[in-house]
Length: 93
Image 1 (cartoon, rainbow, N blue to C red):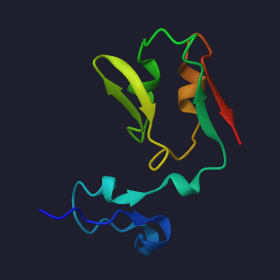
Image 2: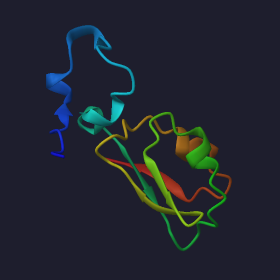
Image 3: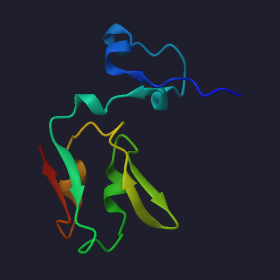
Image 4: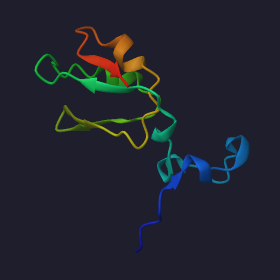
């Protein structure tokens, strides 16, 4: 099975037309981002509230803990920063 190349935002159909269900992972929408979330791992308690609220499913969880932020799909909305109770996430340019 060959892996299909992920499309960039320039390759997405005009108007965001959904041509097939469940295709969000094919599109690299992280290029839209002006700011990116940066997590302070030392302060983070892995409460996962940021993961619950992330509209892009860009916070990757492994073994019940945050493994990484998927910057290929994070659009930089800042919701994770707003909901973090310990302020472990800061939006940076």
